[in-house]
Length: 435
Image 1 (cartoon, one colour):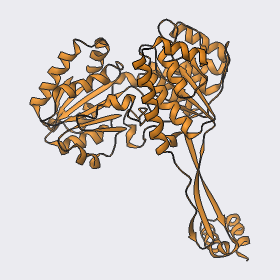
Image 2 (cartoon, one colour; image 1 turned 120 degrees about the vertical axis):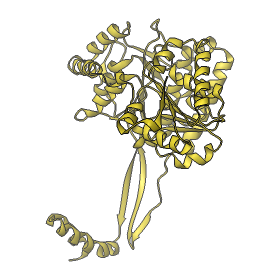
Image 3 (cartoon, one colour; image 1 turned 30 degrees about the vertical axis):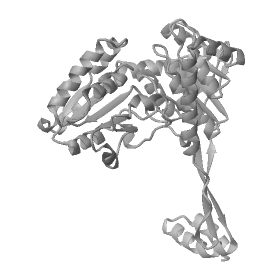
Image 4 (cartoon, one colour; image 1 turned 90 degrees about the horizontal axis):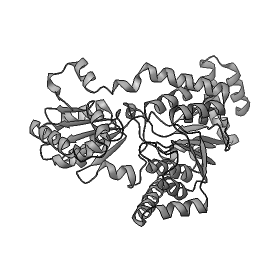
């Protein structure tokens, strides 16, 4: 990780210090994803199969989540694993049931003019669950359960095959906990293309989806971007690419905990980025030494080292400046490891998820606390929030007007319409006012 003194940087230097890894925006990624999309649009399922064979080594396969499959998955997992999965699923469900948007009552803005907001689930959601190198069954829970709580009619799940072409039993068990009846073993940009256009495959049909969800690597993030840009293309949840974590650690923060949190994100992906911000050079040095010590025993050390090459350790004047840096970066995950962590939350304006205090490990949020770990990356936290039940719903205003209400409000609307030069609007209002 590169050590940077924030106070010595000019505006350009500060932008560079907080830049995301350049690999995320390589022209090659954009070009190959466009090629995949063009091919799938032209050849459908045959193209998806060809790209899957080329990139993953296996053709797409539908896995039915039958009672027999779930029983086999349960038998293949230790009881502690199934117990933990059930607790995580229950916590995710409880949180999203508690935060599901509710229809509002009617509000009267003018006597006889009443309006309310109502919520409806989207029809079909395409859920991308990262896998392959590490089966992220937690991401399945974090998407499929909120979608189910929202009332989505059809949830289509895609996830890359394991290295042997199969699926981890925890993925099957998680799918059952989320109430799914099937999932597809297909990954990468070709999976996003399949969800975008809808394709016929040997096992079954993948239907075109109304909205796409889920985190992924640079290829998946780019594919979602291109899908959303298509005429009549699907909506997408948010920019959710390679993982990010920014840790604000004051001089009293535990270097062992800060280092462990940084490594927990660095091991995700070579394109993941971790940033440490502190007012104490001594603590920065202690954390970086601890990172090196812990790396020695990390199974995914090679991945973590590649990520750490894009990492930063930024020294600031004080914690107030640390908050400014965090808001400029707008991280996916923000860990506040300071004595006044609770107080700092009110000053945070841009972060996907905030973890308050030394006990609030980002890992707890990743797996079992309840809120979804699908969060905006690449600075999108300035304008996007993380995945919630509202992400799987649309809101509609409903307006009810009595005859008396129309007589009161129609002249106002007609006058404003004529100010805008829209006589047809004005006449429609006049008809309601008795004129």
